[in-house]
Length: 370
Ligand SMILES: [Zn+2]
Image (cartoon, rainbow, N blue to C red):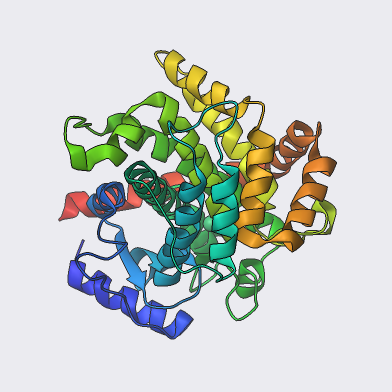
């Protein structure tokens, strides 16, 4: 990896695509305090992938290859909006966290709604809630980074370039100039949908593996957030909420799932198959405790209320109506809908898998030559 060349290629691409400059966060900014994110970023860099930040207010992330450099970009707006949303969520959580009967404090929820509407200028958070905020923040940004890594390592970008002959092959998480990714690339939206499901699945596994693999130092006061991630009973609800908030922010709700035409899968469907992916991960041998903890959270009696209340806090009553209508129409059918999406995407995944192999071989032999 030639870092200065990759950096120049990254800057060149984001100037052309976003009309933006790279963002270099201040040492004590929301970005620089993300420890797990920096671990995941180092992992990408060891694999020859450049990771940078983009200085715009918009929510977006992108994986691309430009002039021989494979890169991942996350916008400043993504970090700021996640930070704001997750602060609201953390401010409503009752301690000790994730009580199956009532994880949410109703009075604080009302405070958070007022804060979102600008009727209050301060969110009141306890030390525990601040630690939860940090853990949620780190996991959600790591999830986005791993999703983009999936677009590169699972051969998506390489397939767009070599298989479909698209130059400037890039996968953006949000429309650019009001154009969806399928329109920007001139490909069928089903292709993009299949790649998005694949990258989400990669991101679930990679994020849970990272949380399993880090060393936890629980005895230090300042590491309260790390304690929350060490303990299965808090780790899995945090993972579940962090993933879902990413979908709430990145994908938009529609009045009905049927009327949705985005090239990314509908947010409620993304939430459902990521949940299935996490269950599969926790069903591996020696993960019994994790499976129990995750199931306990997912089957807690107030979970569905928890998510609709969260939608209300984050987006207000208008989107809540859509969320509830979709929840009703997907009720009892979500497994079938996910299965159909899976079947529909399989031929594309099989095709892309060959390109993932080819990319890997090419990069391995380039590394050996050095
Ligand atoms: Zn994507």
